[in-house]
Length: 131
Image 1 (cartoon, rainbow, N blue to C red):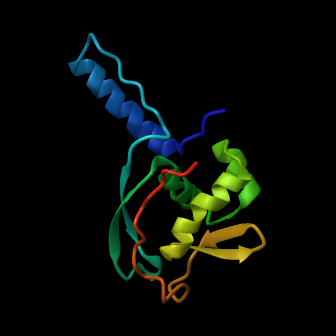
Image 2 (cartoon, helix red, strand yellow):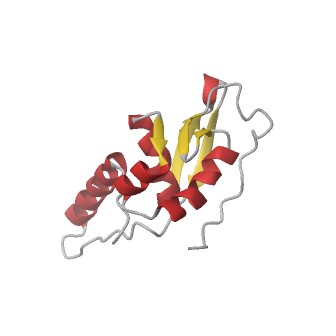
């Protein structure tokens, strides 16, 4: 089953698709949600600074879900995204390492507070080629 993108992400893709098909009437645009990259501008916890990131669509979907709800269990978020819990655990580590999310309990993640992950402020290189 294909992964389920966040509503914001899907809306942006649909708007782009509609505009594209308007200008290229004889062509259709099909998005492959597991390919490509997404440019995000995120504010670090505490509002200290904004960071521009280039992430995979899966990583973008993960962090976008934390806009709607500040805390998620792995299973609930995996069910919402229609991916396995194991895959989510592998991909959510990026956001924990970058200081945007924190582990709140066993298999529970929440938005990080400004004083958490102080030593992990550098953005990690993104390599999401592994399944």
